[in-house]
Image 1 (cartoon, one colour):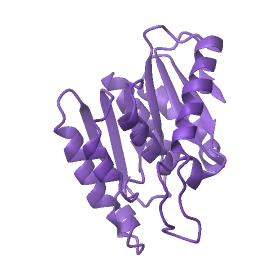
Image 2 (cartoon, rainbow, N blue to C red; image 1 turned 180 degrees about the horizontal axis):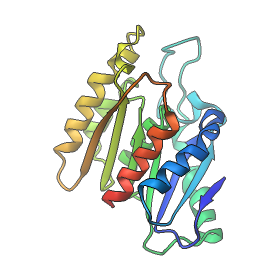
Image 3 (cartoon, rainbow, N blue to C red; image 1 turned 180 degrees about the vertical axis):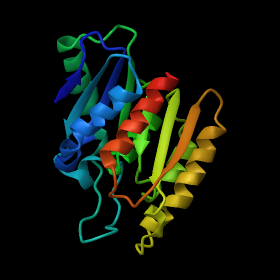
Image 4 (tube, one colour; image 1 turned 135 degrees about the vertical axis):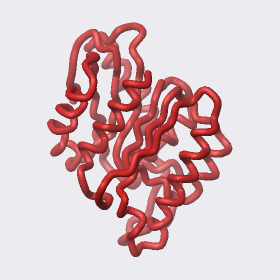
Length: 215
């Protein structure tokens, strides 16, 4: 789905599942309230969340389903299908800024993608799964190829009993410090009330709006 305006100054791209789509109207309304610039928001459906958004295999952290390595293929889909379609059918401005973002594992995917290649001006990572095994080391070895990055976390997310996911607070503080020290990169870390499952649409909207304002 594509929402927004022809001749947009910003193009927002967000991997989504059914839950994200349930909150999309609230997310769009919040973005519009926060910033007046015309924008497009393209949702990219995710068929298998743990497979399609994971940069490399990892063991399960809850339940029995582990993580795959489908992020590269999913990123190619965005590059080769989503962006060309938007440029052809929705005519964003030639100088439009492109922002990749999402919630939870989609937020991790957005960060990984902007460490992997250039092409996105900003990354909006709301409650990203930065506890993902090996991601911090990867982020430190590969510079973020964007001009602005927004991170957020719920203030109760690191209080989970799951020992892997409980590392999320320490991981996101470390990641923010790394970004904040990088020359030419604007970075933010915002703490929201609640656990991981609270206000996903609102948190994602705040992420996109902050990056749009900085760009």
